[in-house]
Image (cartoon, rainbow, N blue to C red; front, side, top):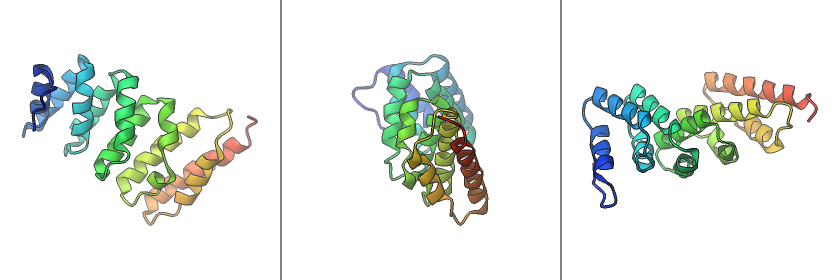
Amino acid sequence: PIDRPHQNDQTRRLMHALHDADSSTRLRTALAAGTEPHAEFVSVLVECCAFESDFYVRDMLTWALTRHPAEIVVPLLLAELHSTTAQARSQALHTLSKIGDPRAWEWVYPDLLSAPEEDVARAAVDLAARRIGSSAGEGLPTRWADAVADAARPSDADLADELQDLLRVVDDLDTVPA
């Protein structure tokens, strides 16, 4: 890990521990970062989501981020949606879906729903499904239904099934008065 001059000692220790070779150490560190949230931890946690290889550690990083104020976390996650790293985008989408901040819904572009990387597309579908579910009875922006419909032709059969299920939800919502 690279130390940054603006990091305090606690944040520097967090960064080093999240780069430890032992996944148990990384898992415990992410748990501690969520148990005792500090605003200065957020950028380190988001950065580590982009490269963490262990599923359980990534999940704990997401949990830790949900324990921090959304007004700090969400802008950094939205910036990750432009990353060239697929894992950074998919983990940002996953974390945004857990936070549930309405500002995030507008950032799931149609290209994320049809991303060539399966993990990114699945995470975008999950976030879209949560958005659609939270909009029941409110009327759903047409662009959401159109984007999901356009993305519903992936080569992966399981992803195609998930998108078709999502389209059925959209159709059902269309019949609910706004």
